Amino acid sequence: MLAWETCCRSDSPLTLMKCLHVLTVVVDFSAMGSGILFSYPQLATLAGLQGVIVYAIASACPLLIFAALAPIIRRKCPEGFVLTEWTRQRYGVATALYLGALTLLTLFLYMVAELSAIGQVVEALTGLDGLPIVIVECVVTTVYTSLGGFKISFITDNIQGAMICCLIIIATITIGVKTEIKPELVADSGLLSSSLVGWQLIYILPVAILTNDFFLANYWLRAFASKTDKDLCIGVSVAMIVILIVLTLVGCTGLIAVWTGAFEPDGDGSVAFFLLLEQLPNWVVGIVIVMSVCLSTAAFDSLQSAMVSSASNDIFRNRLNIWWIRGAVVLVIFPVVVLALKAPSILQIYLISDLLSAATIPVLMLGLSDRFYWWRGFEVLVGGLGGILTVFIFGTIYYGDAQLGGELILLEQGLYTGDWGAFGAFIAAPVGGLLWGFGALALRLTIQFIQSKMRGARFDALDYPITPQLEDIDGLAETSDDANTTKVTGKFF
Image 1 (cartoon, one colour):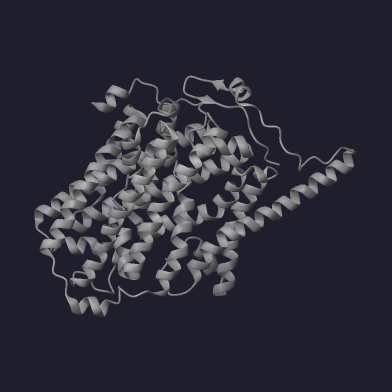
Image 2 (cartoon, rainbow, N blue to C red):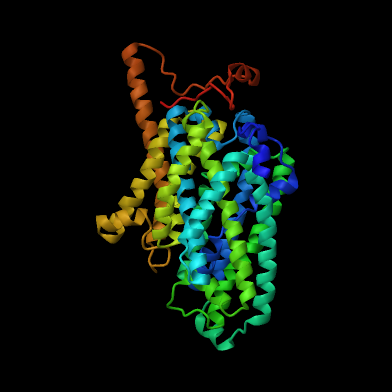
């Protein structure tokens, strides 16, 4: 009914700009999917308490970047509602399309992870095939997001926030009452001691999660929809604390699973949470299933809405009817479901996306500073692709095998191989991206210098650009039925 009520309203994200108050911002940024029930307990079984704390902090604190950067980007690009809009204005069309493609790829991977997670939840807790639940979830979310648009996604985020609170309260009380920790298993597990993986994660996870958050259009939509910068700052700060608490508690279930004997150290850590649930009453398991489906549904509809928004604005500039975009997203769901059923690890899916963002975001964000006015889209594009190539080069040299170097890009060995491969990959991606970017800068300036000499013109590639005033930008704005898009674009080369 809520979706039907909003189906005739404007579906443009611009209609939602500056409409969210503090409490709504808190709930929207606190949104989490059912994937947390796999990845955080899994890391706990491998990296212990140190890994739990690092993972929780690294997941929560990067949200503050939206409170810091969203106001700056809103001032520089008043008509933008996603990061790609500012990218187009700053770096030109080619770079905006590149970032748009990476954003869609990131959303695609997150959709795969979410459906894979809920399918595994159903299979682990009931022993039934998870495919029917996955199909029903896709159909339901597609119907109500098509009718209700972005606003219905915000509403489900509110429901999701209440579900998370109930889930954590019920799980915490029942685990505390019904489980029995064995002191000898605590001592033998070694999970309270530091480890090589735990120390590596102090660098890997903050870099991975911080840069990857930039690709999540659903976060940018909520950041730009906040009513004021103060609402955004307070809301994101409170959401960070909520997420930190929730993820720490969820991660600790992996530790408890080991210490109670529910999980064997040589087993698959991703199911540690569900092995622990087997020791609890059936009614608790039933509640967890229902709430997990609700969490997954709310997370998946946000990803669908973000994909529609990104495709419509970033690729087609709001010139294509929104229903064609929604139809394309429905078609995308078919390969998402297929990959979700075959996905070996939820954590690996996240890490692939993280590595892509670690290579691209550092070279992209240099343009936010006025000191780097000479930085252009060519450098961003070459730097982003060069960062991924650097990972391959590093992997080939480190392992002495080109195939293993290629597998490092997909992090097929995960984070827990006991070597420095994954750690090196997350250093090679951002550092290599910056080196390739500055190399591209030198190449561009050389070409432009030669061209100026051949033409007998003044070399002006390092001149400070003339930025249109806000009223001039407003005058250049193009109004369509769906949204306003600015014609002001930056220079690519």
